[in-house]
Picture 1 (cartoon, helix red, strand yellow):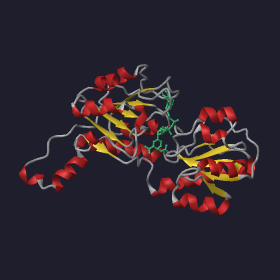
Picture 2 (cartoon, rainbow, N blue to C red):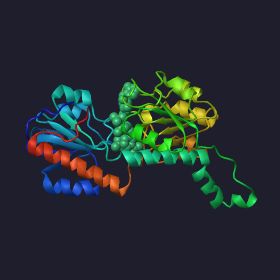
Picture 3 (cartoon, rainbow, N blue to C red):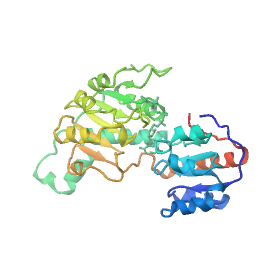
Picture 4 (spheres, protein in one colour):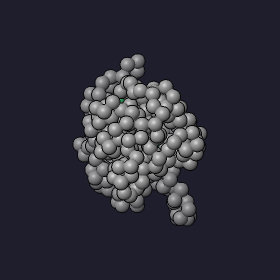
Length: 318
Ligand SMILES: NC(=O)C1=CN([C@@H]2O[C@H](COP(=O)(O)OP(=O)(O)OC[C@H]3O[C@@H](n4cnc5c(N)ncnc54)[C@H](O)[C@@H]3O)[C@@H](O)[C@H]2O)C=CC1
Ligand SMILES: O=CC(=O)O
């Protein structure tokens, strides 16, 4: 989507909670209204005509109904990379431009993916619990799985997928990937079929964007192909994986384990996963370091200032 909106000095509407280090400067510099949790229609009846920009996060997003209720809306400025909760088709149709916060979080999310992978393969979190329970006094912890030299498959070789690949190459792994098409300038083998990639991977890492085309693409069949020695790592979105099939595969040990930062219905995590030692669970903290969240805040504010002052966005979604 290209920025094509006109310069606006209109009111900014905040949709959903934002971290304090974002909210502080936001409310200092801009005339901000906050969308209430209740009596939304009443709020819109009074205020909709003055809103030129909506600010939100990847957790909350903006639906078509809200966009259509804001006749002066020209831009949506998002804190976060994923825009799966923003109805971008409606935004496009209405001529509303959208920005996100790419690149600045890539390293931390890639670090998290590698952390989850090593954790689940070597049982770091599970063996921590083993030590704390005093179980070491009764005997040794079971053997883990070697990471170095293994076969890594990456679903979605975008910014984060590439950063994961670069890290894992240093472990002597071989990297292959699946996406809609081959990525230019990389030598990693491309698998046209995700099932084929899974069949040829020890670790399948999900780093793809979540959209209608990728919903549930990590299916029961893909998990079956990954097999009883294979691990799934997901730092993308829960919606990309058939979560019921994943739970089933883990409970029945049809895959070896999983490292999950994201879930289908956050913050709810399937009950069945809570007692499995071959699953590492993280509360969607891929980008959650002080440094990265500050960088995201800075980029979010750069987009907002640039749009309000010049009518363009620094990092529009493409
Ligand atoms: N766990 C966390 O805290 C975070 C998670 N994310 C997630 O990671 C995702 C990727 O982020 P980036 O690498 O920065 O985005 P990106 O846009 O650079 O990469 C997305 C990749 O998905 C691929 N893709 C899109 N639609 C596809 C389809 N239908 N079939 C196959 N491949 C498709 C693209 O070709 C691209 O390779 C985000 O969309 C977001 O959902 C992002 C930041 C933090
Ligand atoms: O999940 C987080 C994001 O930035 O997207």
